[in-house]
Length: 211
Image 1 (cartoon, helix red, strand yellow):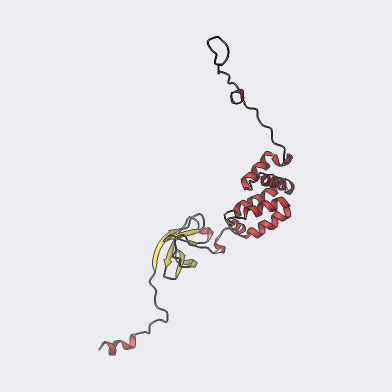
Image 2: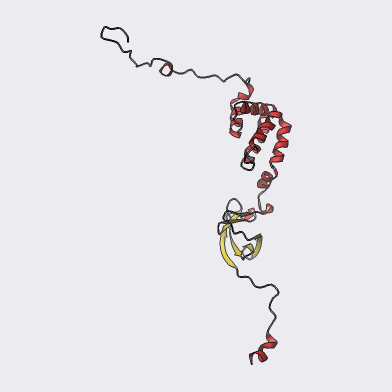
């Protein structure tokens, strides 16, 4: 009876099976990403600190602002994985990404040989970890000029301390303008550290002669 009476009203199944989905509210953090099950998905930077709806299926993650779709990502499953769309990042973040290791090496080569050597030393190990430091060294050239930056890099390399903080400190203290083997003025130590202390009495024997 059911087949006869309802057959005319039944529709064929869709070509793509319906997928079960999980819906939840998420917040866009300051790094332009939301977190879902220990994985991270980017959202447009204009939505930072706002709440979105997240729809997760077995294959995709979609982000909605109210009812408007604002981002689509492939579903991630390994803890710590990150899906980032470049267009979601603010301009300064894109500029940072464009200044890759090859860009840093080219800029350093234009500044001077010692600057180029220091940047290559930074990239000897953990290139991505040292990318920000390399970019910082290049930026110091805009403030202090290529000649002073090259001299500061030479001094840092001489003392086997190829770090951004070292180069910056050398420039701030003006040590790059000293001859490489000339040490800066050293404050003399007090007598308490170099000889007999002020309040230290000499030991004397019973006859009154110093021991």
